[in-house]
Length: 263
Figure 1: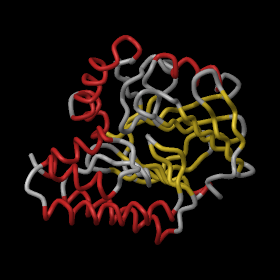
Figure 2: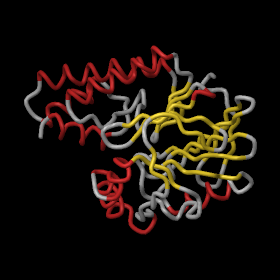
Figure 3: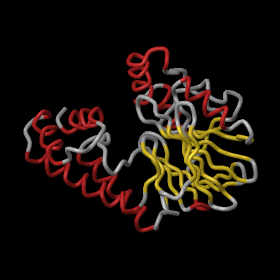
């Protein structure tokens, strides 16, 4: 599937890009919120699963309205635990570590920070997980999903549409990279996607991407490590990265990356 082959539906705030795979459709919701969230719904035979809920009240309401004619049978809550006003009666799926991440760990710290930054627009309530899942295959709404646990939460493979969901990619924006070892781990993960020939890579903060984008990100991650090795502090590191990637968005993510490389 070409990442640019979709039908666009304009909504009041966000927009929906719909990819048609025949028996399965992928609805990629660009929220246009303050943190560029992307939410994915996989539909088959009138039933659907949502991957990562939105976390601003207006987006929660807008997406719920868009999905009203589908039977949403599950929401997978990986890295984005906030937004519990979204489809409160629908089962919520997560691994044990993702649940912990959102309720008490790094995810909860981010939720608290976003609540302070964005005020009443941000739904800081945390989804109550009803279905704890483990690694391996799970079938929901007639769709096979392969769960792969990560350090904080989990990624999802969707074999029927040759797609994979992970938290962040973004071929022309900065990402949160927690030091050299994390950069190596992400490179290994992206190489795995390339070896598998994944058609689409779905992430929480970017429109669907492809393997060419994965290759671009690998080069960026290797460059980050090289720049960090020759810099003495976070400020110098950020300046050098911005010089090399002056067109990239996500300066707030670069700030966090600098803090990890130079604590």
